Image (tube, rainbow, N blue to C red; front, side, top):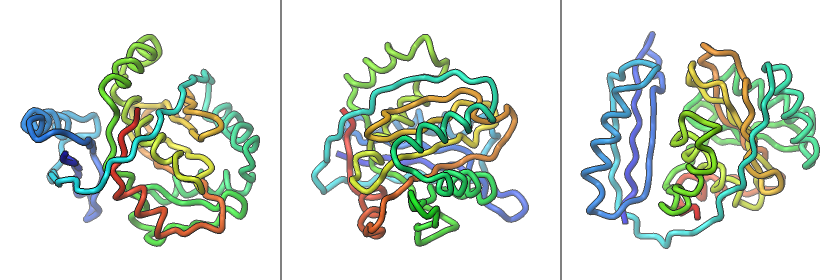
Length: 245
C-alpha cells in the first residue's frame, strides 16, 4: 500500500499561503488515477491557483491500524455567536474548561498555521512543539464501503460530501488517541462556513455558520488531557497509517 499526499500553496508577501491539500492510502494500481484527481483539485480551488504543488508518494511499511468512523450529527445555527455558545456548551459537558475553549478560538483566529494546535483541556496552554507549523494529521484513508454509506447518509445535508468524508476521516483518527479529549475545526475556505467539533463521547458534530462567509481565517485545535507524551501523540497523528471503517 502507498500513502499519496498533495499540498498546494501560493506565496503572498513572502508568506506561503495554503491553498488545498488531500491524501489517501492506495494500492499501486490506483496511483495514476489518484494523481490526476489531485492535480485537478490543486488547480481548481476557490482560494485561487497555487504556484507550488507538492505530491508525495510513499510506500507504507508499517501495519495499518483500523479505527471506527465517528457518528455524524448536524446542528443548524444562525450565526457565529450561536455556534460559539453551542460549541462551548458541548465541550464543557465533556470536561473542557472555558479557558481552554477561548484559547483554542484565539489561536485559530490570530495565529493561522498549516497544522493543528494542541491545547491543554484544562489550563488552555499550547502544547505543540512547533507553534508555526502545528500538527499535521496524515497517512489516513476511509474504507470505500464506509465512504459510500456516509455519502448516502449526508447527501441531503451537504453539497460537498467529499469534504465531509475527509473531515470525518481526520476527526476519527484524532479521536482514537486516548489523551485527545476533543477537536475543534473551522475551515479556512472563504466559501465554506460549516465547522465541527468531534470526540469519542460527542461523535462528529457539524455546525453551520461557524464563521461568516468570505472569512479566510480557520484552523484546527486538539484538546489534550495531561500528562501526555506530546512526541508520541505527534508521531501517531502524523505518521501512523490509519484506515477508518
